[in-house]
Structures are given as C-alpha cells and as structure tokens.
Length: 258
Image 1: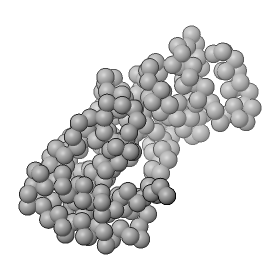
Image 2 (image 1 turned 45 degrees about the vertical axis):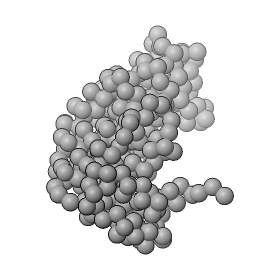
Image 3 (image 1 turned 90 degrees about the vertical axis):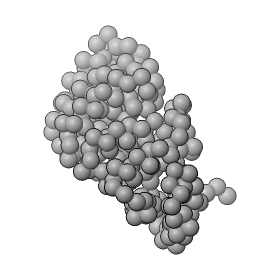
Image 4 (image 1 turned 180 degrees about the vertical axis):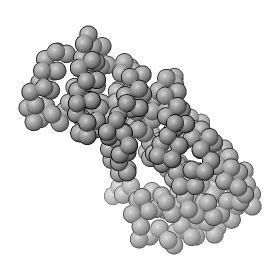
C-alpha cells in the first residue's frame, strides 16, 4: 500500500535532513532531532508535520538566522532540471521553505534569495506570500525579475506565488481590488513556451476573474487579439469555469481565439 503524503514527513525525512546537515555541521545533534520528530509527528497532519520539522530545525541549528539559512541552502544540492519531481525527488525541501517563511521575515533580502533557490528544487509559492504582505515593493521587484528568468521554476513562481486564491494558502486580499501588480508579472509570461508556466498564468487569471471580473476581462480581451498559441491555451484554461456555466462573454472570447 502506497504511503500517504503526510507519512513522507516523519522521522525518515528528519534522518535525511540530519545526514545532510551533519556533513556541514558535525555538532548537529542528529539523534535527538530525529527522536523528537518521531515522537511529535505521529498524530499530526501534513502541514503540521512540515511546520514541526521547520520549528525543530530552528531550535537544533546553532547561530543566527543568517547562519542557519546559509547552512540549509548549502544542503539543497543540484537544481531540478525538469518541470516534474518537485514533490517526489525534492519533497524533503518543504520544511526548509517553511523555515524561511516563518523565521525569515525580518531578513527579506537573504530570505527572498533563498526562496528562489528553494524553488529551483521544490517550490517557494507558499513561503513568498508573507513577504508580499510585509515587504511588498521589494518582493514584487524580485518577482518581476523572476518572470524574465531563463529558469522555468522561477518563472512559474513569479506567477504562482502571487495568485490571489492559491489553494491551501491565505488569500492575498490586497491584490483583489487592484490586481495591477499581478498583471505586470503575468504580462511577461503570456507567451511563455512552458505548459508548466502557462498553467500557472491561467490559474492566476482564473483567480482574478473570481474577485475582479472587469479587470480580468480587460486583460483577456487584449490577449485575445492576434493571440499566440501560448495565449490561446492560457485563455482557454483560464475560462474553464465560465465555459462550464455557458457564460456568453467567455463563449465570445473562445470564438475569437478559435
């Protein structure tokens, strides 16, 4: 019987992290770290297990936040060269992302850089959101850079991390009334060749349709004029919910891009 997802985040993951950490920090108390995760994770669900491991890492690692972060980033290993594998080969990086999300807000420069590195293996789409709330200008500036990156994972993060209604994440209320910051980013991605990125852009547009339809309609109508194949796919996917409801405006857009 296959493991439940939450069962990957137990003492075995703690052991994996401990082994990686000890290579750089021999004084790390691996046995106690693993034992604590084993004892405390049994009754927890997935999100709480990830947070438990992040919190326990914070307590067992020595030094400042910067020192802890430097060590954790050093154990990430090679970047993921594929658009898959985020949650199969690099699942163990998730507690590191949670560590940055929870403990790095007072250190935005190094934390945002770390989220970029994490994303090249796993994902920083959840970790980046508190930074959008607390350090909006700085974070948006970096996300606009990511949207033009040659790295597909960073381009996807630029879109996925700023989604208004990202599943399992707190809603980004500040962009519901005025999605202009989102649109500036996804404008850079509307002709992206990667389906991985296109799907994220479409989902972001779908979110905007739910909270600020007028704004979403304007951008979709603009993109539907002489659209590239990438834009056609994005628009079709973004309108999937409206098409199921036989929405007349959505039907008109689909006719326009056919």
